[in-house]
Length: 133
Image 1: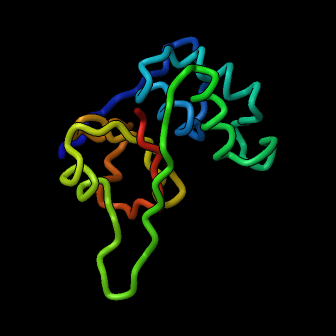
Image 2: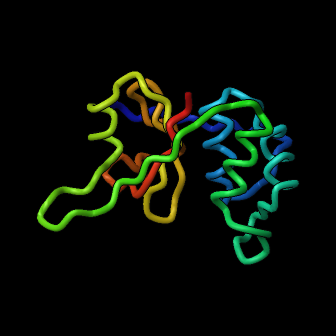
């Protein structure tokens, strides 16, 4: 697995660091950032979490639904005495998969063996992921 710096925002898009959910959906679907931002905003996303409306997970899944993408939610619970799931391990298990991954305080994308994001979070624990079909 390798890290690839990807910033889907254009110069006229929002100036926020708290938009990893929008970047992830845009990166995994190939849909323009501004379109994903509009849908996420309509689904309750706000740049500051305390102002968001509803659960952030539902904001992602509803946006994927509206864009016509199918997905499966996969959980990776911690098991005592075993190493936690990371993007590196998940990539080795499914090198051609497309995933939105939830790591500690962040959302990222694992796409065909590459971690697509603005920073390398490949060593962070993956709590769950949506496999995009």
